[in-house]
Length: 68
Image (cartoon, rainbow, N blue to C red; front, side, top):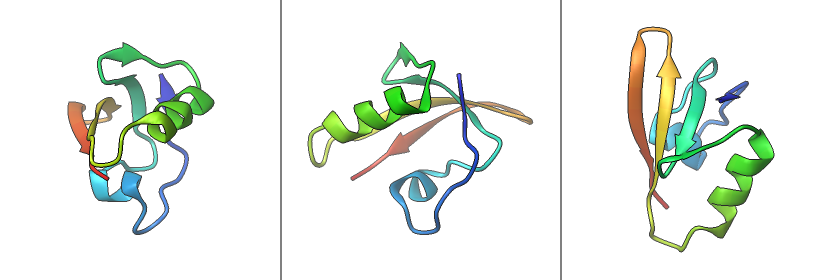
């Protein structure tokens, strides 16, 4: 997984509900191993196409949708 170190206010990640300390395990059901891999997947998505993140958080696992 990929540790979220910081989330910029107003960014798509913040709007999706990602928080520092979250660990992104999957993006659209594909396991991710590096931040650059996550950034590539975000960059190549179609405008208006949400991305689904599977996230490990201290109080449990959850899915978050990254909207455009």
